[in-house]
Length: 166
Image (tube, rainbow, N blue to C red; front, side, top):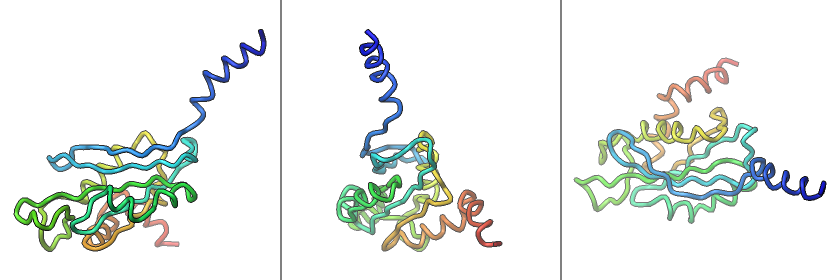
């Protein structure tokens, strides 16, 4: 009887203490348009421990699913324990031949991608995120606006200022 009670207790409690690997497409509204991004949470994620986000931005003409596959960052997230975010750019109706692009503030897209990054972070509030350790990994056109986000974002400034005055 005691063994059955212990087994039943373990079945009820154990799932709340374990976290399983997740890889999914998420959708949010940002700047008045529907935006999508892939989220990868490694199996070793512990909700009790702050975990960094790594943003993995595809280049012009790319897509989140292709870039996530090409960069193999999921395996790195598994060993380094970070949440991987791979967002999709938007197709500019004026220049659809460019495919999915990012607003680099010099051409091509009127979409507010800096707002999109902030909205993605807000939408992930169910996770214990360490923003001080979260960084954008960007290539191609994404470099300029990822840097702009770091400079302009109140969250980034709040995290970076103590490091700069040491």
